[in-house]
Length: 130
Image (cartoon, rainbow, N blue to C red):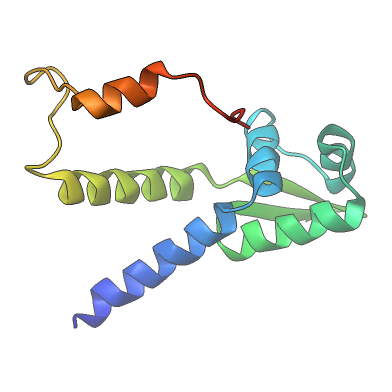
């Protein structure tokens, strides 16, 4: 196994794991809407306890998806946009590679679901989407 690929995959997996929590996704969106925020701002916006926000930010910082800088008595948190763009690119490349030849490209012919799938889509859902 190529160790460079393995190390890269490990890094991508750690970043994806950091994103795999609804509160962290919410915090990222809130950070993305501002130049930078302190924990107090994020606590107010997210409606979460200060300790919870701090713990989630720690995970995002360790994954290098968010950066922080000390500012007097507070720390300011900022989205690491280049790291998020790179991660999005890796995910896109991975999906493109996985789907090569098996998934129709948009605009390259029509894809129709098998009849049983179409029937399932037509039935009302038994649950609500969250």
